[in-house]
Image (cartoon, rainbow, N blue to C red; front, top):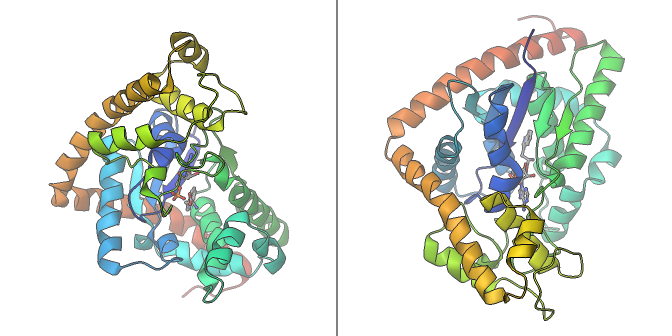
Length: 330
Ligand code: AMP
Ligand code: TRP
């Protein structure tokens, strides 16, 4: 029996946060055992917001090193850089032709980003979800593990697959999202109503996978809580709830266990312990990361092999698509 296909990616824009780790990367590692996985570094997506070229190059390698350090294995999965496989941009053009402006303008992420840069809004930001659909559909992915914030984009990918299939005959597998129920969304440490994001202007709002112990202790200490003073998992204490989520995913303890262990204990002690739990979880990843970043030749070998494998699979789909829409074979 053929193994099911998994596709996912993150953008190489700045450092990755523990939100990316918990909501995405950590789960990808386990999926490798059961599925045929493609894990991409989506540099084409990254240029939908302004990038400094030399930083983009550096960040792309960093994400690859984080993938490897987190346990993604190039023997089991295909690890590659999006711009190395031309088919992503090419399929995007074709899918643009069946994408509705109305639907794209209702995408939450677009609306939010548009608000932030009204003056020179670029067209790529608008078609960002179409490129994401292309990523997924090229590999005939069955499952797409993402954080909750990407659900709407996935819905669009499904729509486009179905629309194309209806218009031109069965071509694409219709993908399903795979969203972790627990800890799917890690919130900002400064405002637990918004998601933790590396693009936050306040660096106390997020913890990076590569943050050093001192920074982690400082940021957790400053994390917003409340005046209730109890470690209880509920929606009246969103700050505490978020910290408990983080504690739980890094320690493996359930929230009930955490509630029991911290009965009558103040926030100060809880935060101290939480910082240590995070540090313990991140240190081995950081050590491996340093090792991979010192071995650029190895990274190059990984992404070149990845691109070759990915290209083979992607071209198979793209050829079918070109034929169905009526392009003459070159
Ligand atoms: P991005 O940073 O937007 O490229 O996101 C990469 C992956 O990380 C996506 O699957 C997101 O859903 C996930 N992700 C990003 N931020 C968070 C967060 N705060 N909590 C959970 N998952 C997240
Ligand atoms: N848009 C995703 C994000 O910001 C990243 C992404 C691009 C992606 N292409 C993808 C995720 C394909 C899953 C599948 O998180």
